[in-house]
Image 1: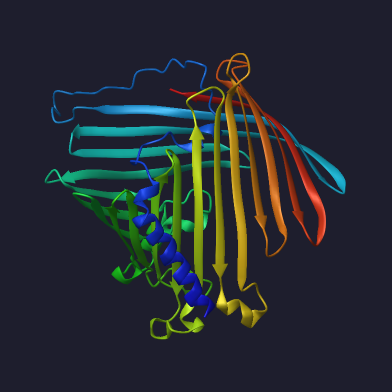
Image 2: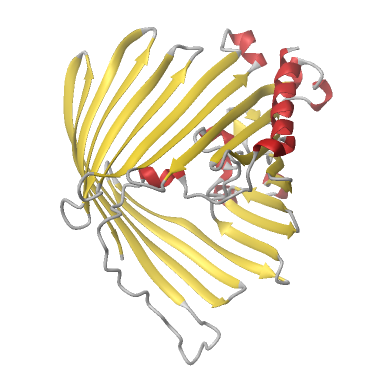
Length: 393
C-alpha cells in the first residue's frame, strides 16, 4: 500500500507539471545556480595564452588543435573539534591538460590528463573520447567519458549513470522536433585484462519529450553481469521525471525511480529494492547586486528489504543550499551556506563559507566552518582557512 502511494504521488506530481499551463510563463534559460559557488575569481582578468594551432601541410584535414590547461593550488589550516581539538594543515595541488582536436564541424577528439599532489601523487587520464555528428542529425560519442542525466541538482543518487561514469561509454542521441532519444552503453575497461564479454555491458535509455512548457523524461538502466553490490548483481532501474519553470524563474522539478528486485513481484514489496522520490526548485536573482540564489531538495527513500535486517525502511532528507555573491566595495566577496538534515536519523550537517577574491593575482581567500550533528553523540566542528590559486592557461 505504501509502495502504491509513493508511485501515485510521483505520478501526480509529474502530471501537475505537465498540465499546469495556467500557472507558468514561457520556459526561459537562466544562469546556473552553481555559479554562485564557483571558487575561481570573477573579477580578475586572466591573460590566457593562445592555444596551440597546428595546420601541417602533410595533414590538411586537421583544421584545429587546441591544448589548454587549468591549475588549482590550495594551502590551508584546519581545526577539528570533537572533544579535544585537533589542528592540522594541508597542501593540495592539481593540474589538468586538455586536448581538443577538431578536423571538421562534424568530428571532435577530446582528452584530459590530470596530475595531483595531496596525500600522494596521482596521474591519470580523466577522459578521452570522440564525438561525431552523423548525417547532420544523430550525435555519436564514445570513449572514457562521463555522462550525467537528470533534472535534480543536489542529491547524487539521482543520476543513474553516476556508478558507470568514467567507464568506456558509447552514447547515441537522436533528436526530433520536441524531444530526444538517448542510448548509453557502458563497459568497465578494467575487465579488459580478464575475459571481456558483451554480457558485461550496461545499457541506459532515456526518452525526453517537451509537453506544453514541461520537459518530461522517461529513463531506465540495465546493468551488465559484472556490476555487483558485494555478491549481488545490481538491480535494474526505471523512472520518470519532469521539470518546468514557474512564476518567471523558479525552476521546479520532480523525479521518481525504482530499483526492481523481481519483475514478477512488482505488485508486492518483494519486487523492489527501493523507491526514491525527489522534488526541488532553484532560483537565481542576478538582475541586481548582490546576486542571490537558493536551491532546495527533499528526498524520500523507501527500502522494504531493510525491515529484514532491522534497517531504516523510510528515510526523509532535506538538502538546502543558499548563496550570495558580488558583495563588498569591489564586488569580489561571496558567501554560501549548506544544510543537510536527515529527519529519520535526526542527524545532518551545516556548513557556512566566505570567499574573498582578488587579494593577490589569481588567488582567493576561503574561510569555512562545518558542524556535524546527530541524536546519538556530541556535535563535531570543523574550521578551516585556505589560500587558493586558480589559473587557466
